[in-house]
Length: 493
Image 1: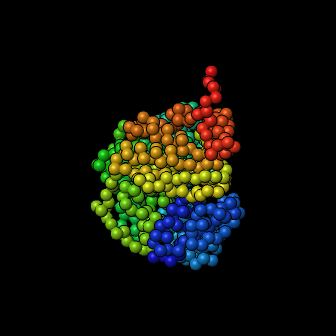
Image 2 (image 1 turned 90 degrees about the vertical axis):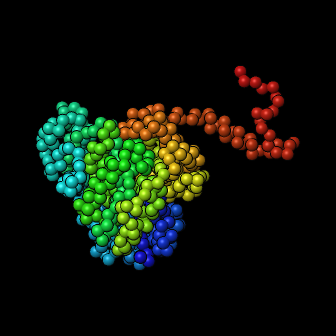
Image 3 (image 1 turned 30 degrees about the vertical axis):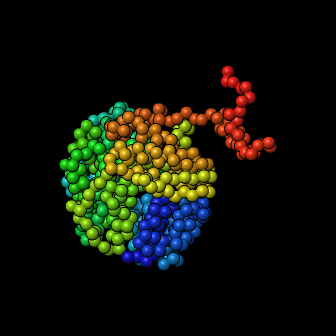
């Protein structure tokens, strides 16, 4: 096992990785930009190294500075977390060339699965079902339009090099294809430096179900069940759960085997996730979407239902150990649901928010886990991803897990920074969510009813005045008296 590992990330995932490193007796090295000099991950690591100014391009995305920090601290391995350089094949190769172990898949696997066209061709050859469409490389606008007409609208235009929903266009009218292709290319070029597109058949009201895989360097590959990630807003996941209520045991086993074959097809090693799109009315007809060659944000729900620490197994596999279990040893027990708490204001169209965390309360225990990068005094800005924490609840069944998560979100306090916690609570209480009737468009259809009216300024003013009165000791009394209990003849109306 490694003696020292550098965590090339920040926020809650850096804190999460450091926690496992500490439990394994491995020395942790944090890195930080000027904006994060007093961040929680910096304080919790065994040592920390400044890598540059606040902009990510000059700090967390600087391969040169990260490698310098690893050399200076004697790190033997680098854990990329997720985001930033986690799925950057160039960074993985640079680590290897510097004599560092990259705690993730081989660079070639990252590059292959990062190219959506090559990825589809590769897994299709391995017998994994893919969405009908055109995945030829370098299609012209005219060829894309012809392919879309052959498939039949509605179709989805997707950047080959991208992710996170950027550059994706749903086209329901064939006459709009030319304009939508041009718009998708512009966004793909701006976001990824590559405007190559593919076109796929659109599945109405689909469900997003992904399979967690774990592979060692000795030929062992297992899947750890599925996660349901259908609750999304603008193609970004906001609620995830495991297992999915949609799948029966036969379909679960078939999808798991398909994910294992996808991992084998690219020579995968480490923890990865194979994403499928599934028609809600026909779960047996699942299709490969893409493979995320990293630890997923939503990995805690899998940890809770399997009892495995995925970060620990990332480390063990990277250190050359074989998996200590086979597929028949994996048991899924209970149900887990995760909510992503973000610095955003639902009442203002989910605009990013910021400020200083003046008071913090994060629930733990009684079936609840919070993975967070926050502490009181944390300055939340707009330079980095707005996700602040993840609140995860576990129970013997789905109803219990949902109830515990709603209660935990009600207890979550980040005074000084507006978050989406209230929005998440209302979403979890929506009848369709409670019944498990999910699809990727549900949140967008119901968003208006899920956003609470803003509390009027007068209410805050009245609360402040009442609080001020409660702190003032009356001159002729022993302490505070409830002003509403005074018999002064005042009446409403």
